[in-house]
Image (cartoon, rainbow over all chains, first blue to last red; front, side, top):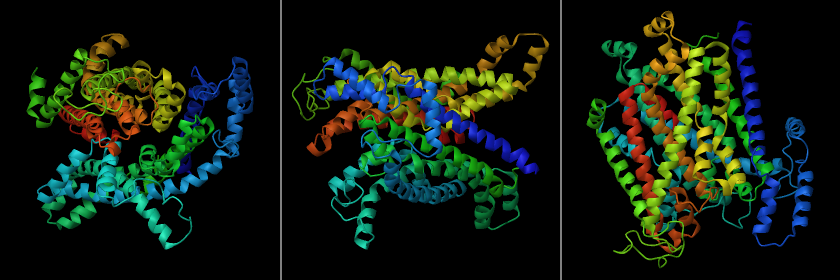
Length: 335
Length: 284
């Protein structure tokens, strides 16, 4: 009971409040801007060279505003937005009108989910292992070489790594396709041939994410492990002649993993916001590409949908992490 | 001066500072540019590097070298401006929340946590989509500055929390000095180093965001920055056409900028506090 009152309820309240705050912000911020999406759309149409006399333009703006429900007061819109949100409805997409945003998200989500799930798990395992080893066995020459390479890689902006991979492995040595989720025209089916095709297309995007992810995770883990190594209990175990491998796996890694698990959970949240730049660079058909297409077409509803989804994912995984942390770390008192 | 000498002893700091000085010199050179970097078709198109054009020319008919100098200048200015704005916010919030504690602290930190969970890239995209043409260097700096303070405000607050328990705080309070005077005269000195360290970290973040937005074609692409240069090079298929100098110039400059800022921030924060290393790497 104490657990529920002292630990669970405050966190649940914070979860709800932060989620509401986040969603409220993404609702109001764009609406406070001097130009609305509708004006933007009409301006886009005019920019493409279509002639519109001012009256027709005015009329179009009015009609569109009414259709999207933007002609009502801010408060009224806000309430309507929440009402629709509770039924899980983000309204129709403005590009692919009248296909609902939900449906478009549902077709893109699996692509992003599979790609990012794989890379997040791989990064977690490789990055922590190599970082832990490098932090613990500081005299190893191989590990020092790895460390130096990672020093160089870690500050690289993502798109540069991605572009380099494309130039190297798609243009110069054409091992992998330049982009896309599968060969254009291939039949989407559950066959070995199709799966092989998908994997081949996903390889470079996954590689780019893994390279940079491992680099950051490695660096953080190395620092944490170095800190843990200074702790009294590790020194004591060394003096007590506990086997070095036992010290590493049972004493050092176990403690050092704790903050990394939190990072892992936050990485999970990204499964729903997608890797925007990755998917654009590699033309991968996931949520990021969907968001990009929405950007190009000023598809307001779609972006709201994706942003809301990713806020939910982020706050929910933070909450879950808070609730699960006591399981991993017996030192956290449930108060 | 003593600090600087101690920092220069660190190889990473001197290397980072050296790269940064080269970049600053390049940025200053932009003032001497013979061509307007926003003009198109001022030189022959698609020329490889030669004595006349150090870094060749682009398909837009621009001299890559001179555009690059302007781009470096603008990117540096933007990063500095945006990071300064968010420093002011982070510092104020951290000071107020950390010093007053209680309900004010809780409310401010709640807002802070709200900002932390926002998917900022998507929000910038959403805003940039609407603002596009208005997104000049100044508005972009404001946008990044107003959104990018949450993580560092928490750092500031924890620093103030520890200062509040120090002896001199009690001395000051007991001798009746007002809270504002205490904050500005005593605390500010202590948090300046941390402010500098987070400033560099924030500049990396701002540049990254700018390049990402420009890369997607969401900023005002007529202003030369590292991001918009990359945007044009990619849009005109510089790789496919074999115009390597066009694409490698912004990439090289970006790599240099990121590495130098990274080296500087790593060395500075290590100098300030060995334990801060962990937090800083986590923020990037």
